[in-house]
Amino acid sequence: MNDKISVKPDTIYLEDLLDDIANGEYIIPIFQRDFVWKSSQILALFDSILKGYPIGSLLFWKTKGYKTKDQIGLYMIKKEDSDDTKYVLDGFQRISTLFGVLTNPKEYKEKNNTELKNFLIYFDIKENSFSYIRNKKDKNIFSIPLYEIYDNRELFNLLRELDKEDITEIDKNRYIDNARNLHSILHKYKLPYVEIRGGDIRSAVEIFSRINSTGTEISEDYMLSALRYNEETGFLLSESITVFLNSLNAYNFEDLKRDTIVNCISNAKGRIYFDVKIEDLSNQKSEPDLESLTNNAYTHIKKAVEFLYKKLFVIDIRLLPYPTQLIFISEYFRLNPEPTLEQCRALKKWFWVTTYSNYFTLYSLSQQRSAYQVFCEFAKGEHLDGIYRVDNDLPFNTAKYPDKLNFTGVRSKALQLFYLKSIIENSEIQDREGVKEIFISSSSKKDRTPANIILRLSSEFEEDKEKKQTNNFIETSSIEVLNRHFITQEMVILYKQDKESFISEREKVLKEKEKEFVEKRGIRYTN
Image (cartoon, rainbow, N blue to C red; front, top):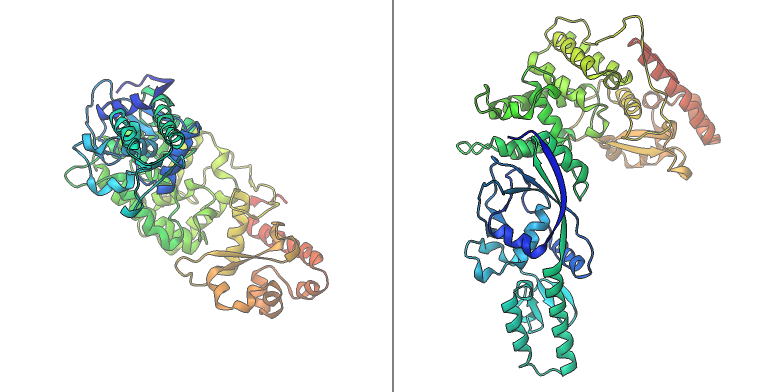
């Protein structure tokens, strides 16, 4: 494959695009997700075209060698892997809609008839609007299948049929104008597109992520699926990852990024993931093959997720400070499948140190490679704590105490995990345990300062409905329970008198307890 890459923006008439699709010049790589648009989205697309609104840019990749889908819309398409073939990277849903709706089914033999109803859109020439007609009794001479409006011959026949209707000349001309106007708009409509030429998978992914019209990302596993689709076993990496993510539902990790899983698979090559090229994974001669490598990786990832969930209180993927932590811990279980209790304690300490020290943002790429090697030695029992230090005399420092509790910052996640450790440790965590919040100062719910929020477990929250209210929880819970929430006996009395003073005192306790915890792990605490 040509590594030299070029990016060319341009426009194309809709009618030329549809002709080229029919001739096999645009094809759908197998890594594309299936067609998922709802009826409302299909109608909205044509309404935008009628009104002259832009419908977004398309992204094509001019390359060769990928497995492709057989169908666009409801039609089976030619698959010509020639020098002029372009793969659709972004715009598959729109292209499927346009080709499926505007292509005349009477003239296209190769089609999936069971899907015809999903693409049969009608244009009401009286109301100048689009709709589905599901009931035969609702059909009339004024509701026209959109492909008939688009097709020159069908449109001519339609106009002749109107002459037979008992309508005024003024109305008939208005209806004809509506039909002709839409016909003209469809044939003159231009779509902007960007064409990538050459390059490898990663460069195509990067360009897609930067300039695609919807703002969504394409995961590398979809690209890799196209290169390494196994026709004998039916193994498709993208589908395999989807099934695996569903299995993580019990740990609230089903939203784990797909690329993180690919990175775990890459790590199993024995090098840090960013040094493993996607092409290395797609090499058919490599041992083990991608399918075996992936299935083995799932075992280690599942162990890592369970460890994070049960031992480190990461009871939601949103609480994971760094995706790299999951990648490393997955690698730990690959190298050491059955660690001892002592080794598990050391791994937990490694997690807290890397969380509070900004470990994964401190180092350059070369230093991250060194950190990975040290960690692998740690997994094999050949290093004390798995922490790579550039200077042994300089301690790690925490970031500043967070102003707000949320899921967007590592420091905020660290504090929430510390809080969850206080209330969960030595307890049995249920499947799908979640985090609930109650606010101390109910008049300022937008105040997300840590001391104003009490974290509750979803199971506990549902068990005692009376304690959903903040005052009931604080005034009726045992002092042992309240202490785990950083609330002292003195503060309970203060709560009844002055909530703002209560919050201020609670913040002092939170900081004091967190500082004690962090400094025991050799990290300098920054208030």
